[in-house]
Image (cartoon, rainbow, N blue to C red):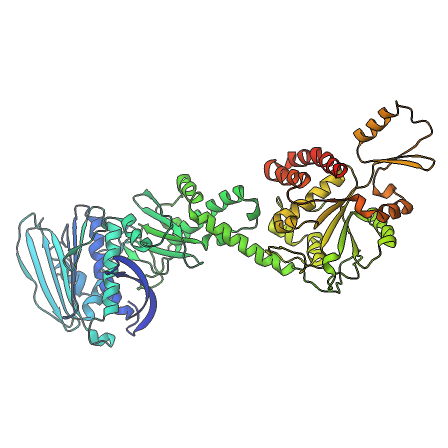
Length: 626
């Protein structure tokens, strides 16, 4: 029945001033609370046994220390037990090791068993009065026990009308047994809350009275409202699956999983297997939908989703088994429930459009950002451990904002850039080769981004800090990025993936003028003596040939298949007139807009084609017009 020593615990109680349930730290004796609960559950069980029951009355006289629980419906049979030769009401409440509900072969969905619990209420009372009317036998029964069930008066059996059917238990707890002198406020508040629980369980077709006042709660949905009252924007997704399962789901306001649950009218304060069955079912189905909707949540787990849920469960379980007589936790295996909870698709659909998913995604984003911050760079002059990086001498120093990091397409392009550094110097130019195509961060999972060495290197080389909105480059190791790729589709794709990375993770950098530039080299060069012409697109070359009437005799035509086909001499020529080969890629320029549009609009299979079909022409056209 629980400890007879006072304890403190967080508990929900009814606050009459606000007309809602509030959570408080309560000081109470579990044993006293439980004997009241046993009598109350016996009364609510009668609704299961006899659906014609329409009234439950609970009166708590705090001053006198007397509690009265009344219910109508079929009364206790007023007849002599054949074997024990005592009346059945006395057998139920006044004799140990007896019960009307011990046959586990019979499937029952009641909470009490009229076993130890009801008798313990008698044992721990100074006075315990049994009254019942058995209309079928036209008998009214009354019997009084005193001094912790050690004394009893003879039962008084009188005649009643056939329509009279009810049971009333009145008892005065022996407060000294609980080291108390009076029914304390916290204890009474917890008892009153259990009456509201009863209204949530059986209130749909039953009038519930507490100290003479009729409760407004008319079922489980109304009952849940008492918890959610005053919580702005808290969704309430209620589902009555069948006669044995009522479930309501909302957002947890603690950041951890919350539950409020009942088994056959018993308040399972610590939950149990019935709560797990509901929470796991809802979380798994919700997770499946979230993953289909949000690709960034590929690593989200069911337990993560569950932590953001607050579930209310009202279940009828066949022959429930609990962890102890206090019945705080259900232990019955799900396979023995006698029924199964299955979350309806309509419930998940409602949750997907509620604030539940928004909160889960917000948490996932925060968690991912926190993890990505572990890979942040910092503004420092010395950087080690990054292979193939040729760092600028001034990177991370007081002149870092004037430094440019050249990102090249592979090692051959890096060799070209290094040749050019002999012209511009190494103080303000660094070079780092990209290994093929950069990771597409919009389609990648969080783990893929975390484990991608190249993205980590770029963040560390630049000194980028995840989640930072930049309005200048003064806090970075480099003030500019220069993309140096081949002028073909693969080069444009690499360029687009880098822009995509910056726009997805550091969009503010693209708003800083001159932060991102591309280095555009010719794809064709025509030479004749000291004359030379360079062309950046095939149409541009064709126009030149047409202006020559197709007569290119004497001209040496060189096609550049990539940066690797440029000579060291040509590299030095490029870098000698570096500004001429620069094209700034700001957030408002056409190539950037083409990348953003393609990655936001097209599916993965069509995105690359849509992007590379436009960016080469857009960038080179813009370059020539500048």
